[in-house]
Image: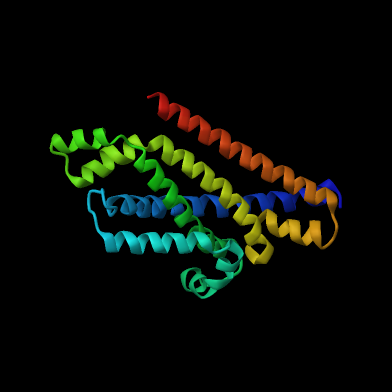
Length: 218
């Protein structure tokens, strides 16, 4: 296979991988922060302590993190069809990618929020801050470097998951790797895909580190 033949395939595969990663990252960030905040709020020493709610949330998150992505992707096919109308293609892959990543990111959010100095929260409470203000203006604000670092890890994991999704009908670089690298022994195509994935991960890591440094120095 010549470079002229590979270039459009690689371009399309890269765009599909970016589409899967970007959309699932947006949904994961929203869902993961919500679940992570609820985990902290409902903890024994949280702002809204609830043993039952905390235990249920923790169980759901732990179960979600325990299921291998390829099994989860096949297991929620009916849900994926309900959401996007199909179980094949880039849009369909975004659903299991998000479902798999939310519990993963939620635990990272929980860890970042727990690293906020308790004295900072206590001082804000003493000044009359309400619970929503404590969450928005104290916990989430003070934990921004940890939240960005966790999201960077999650995005890199999503890039890896997207390659797996491509292997079973999700499109993207993973699909190309299976169809051309594995089934047709196109070594050059496989190497090009590996280089693209490494470059994507490196860019995400560099951008994440840059944001974390800027937020930490403020």
